[in-house]
Image (tube, rainbow, N blue to C red; front, side):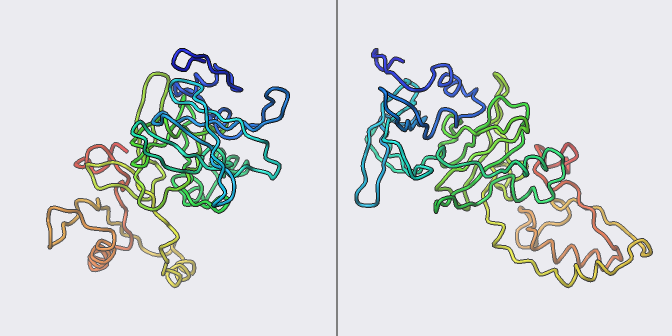
Length: 320
């Protein structure tokens, strides 16, 4: 492969690298991250990274204070780098990447492509069957810790996509930098990105042949206030439920013998707050004011018009 007119040999197949650079690879882990190879008659560990924003890169290995910086070669002009390192005999390799941009600014980061997938075969089976009743704990953006490294695991269902990438404020909304792995034949795409945390803004960049869409997360747990449309990483475990008494009482009620009167409502247009009529009411405000109003009017149930994000606010979400 050419680098400034010089051909650079690589242990990776050129056609596979081309699929990666063209954003058409269903499994970037087949190219990126650590791979056991044989080079010049010796077993080596080839570590590859796609860093289109960088001019130089190093593999950083060894304990703190005794790090070894191994230079990576650019094996493709688009920014694919590779380093051949001694084999790791202690299981999964634990290394970091040091990168430098055109201005010479350096930063160190964990390599997303050295971490294993978190969706299990059983998860994928249940998701495919439509019987995973805790899918909200698997899909979307989940805060996770792997090998002592904190980050966010992203997972989304896009069975017909050619490729899917995570884009966000952490990578300049650049779809080249974090392509996801497709679980075949399930059609779920997944990637753990170390170093991310609560408050991160993100979307999925979905490609189908030559067409590209930037989409909010259908399993997102928070989002920007419209007209901005990015999803936001939040920690669901921070919330403490206080409805145990109500759940117990509900289980003892014979609803088939009770009257039902349903109040259908669109939360965004039901009422505006008195302190600022230009904004929408929050869920915490609605939880008190709407429930008190419905009880006063004699209703027994509330039916919500779509609460998911939709292109036209005035539509009440009928196109979702």
